[in-house]
Image (tube, rainbow, N blue to C red):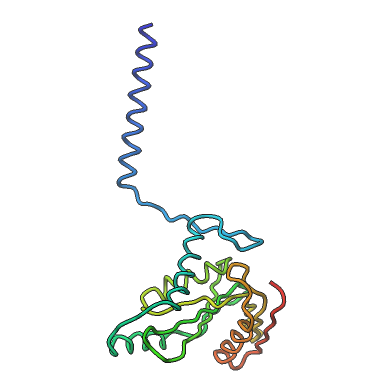
Length: 200
C-alpha cells in the first residue's frame, strides 16, 4: 500500500514538472507559422493559414471597391510614385503558376497598374499572391486586387514563354492570359511569347 502511494506521488510530481516546463515553454517559445495548404485538385484552402491568405486577398478587393480615402495631394503622389516603381513582370525559369494583380492608388483618378508575379518553388496561386503582397505590396497604401492566374512556361535559353491555364483558387478571368502575355512581351521584346486559355 505504501509503495502504491509513493508511486502515485512520484507520478504526480513528474506530471507536475512536465506541465510546468510546458507552460514555461509556451510563454517563451516562438510561435512557428503554419504553412498554408491547398487542395491539389480544386485549389481550395485546407487550413487557417491558407484561408487567411484568401481572406486577405478578398479584403484587398473589397477595399478597392469601398475605400473612402482622404489624403493630401502629397500622400497620393507618394503612393503613385511607389506603384510606378513596381516591376510590371517578375517571372522565373521553368513552369510555375502566376497571378496577375491590379493595383490602384486611393484618391486618384489615374488608371490602375497591373503586375504579373510568378515565383519558383511555390505551388499555388494564393502563395504567389502572398509572396508578392508580403514582399512588395503590403507597405503601399493602395487598392490591391487579384485578377486571375494560370501557368507560365519560361525557357530563357530558347527565348520562349507560354502563358496558359487558369487559377482554380481565384477562378477563371477572361482576358487575363492575353493581358499577361502582352506585359511579358513588353518586358521581353526579343522572346517568342504565346498565350492560350486552354489547359490548367
